[in-house]
Length: 127
Image (cartoon, rainbow, N blue to C red):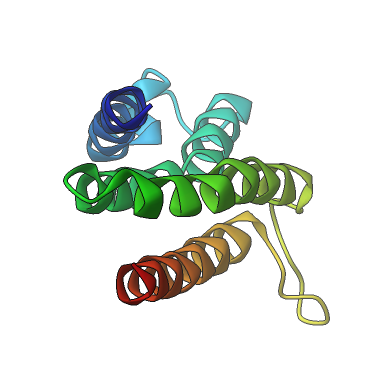
């Protein structure tokens, strides 16, 4: 399970970084703003929590299996839930409700990192 998680999250993370480097403007043929750019942006932002998953997969790869399993139980629930939250959040906020896909993705990634660190540290001291 460790190897599969590491490889899949690594491949998806590399693809996301490459797509972000290319940019939505060039991905859509440099024809100006359109729905194609919105679709690519939403897809890139929706898969943003995969990058911290890859980083913590690297961290937990050499750790004992008990620590990895404790972290994996949390991750396999958190990542899909955060992706659903990003998917249902609006693309553009307004002055009253500043919630949009980017802020939801950012905060879900930050919370994932904090909780993952807590789980890994707690399990390390427990064993």
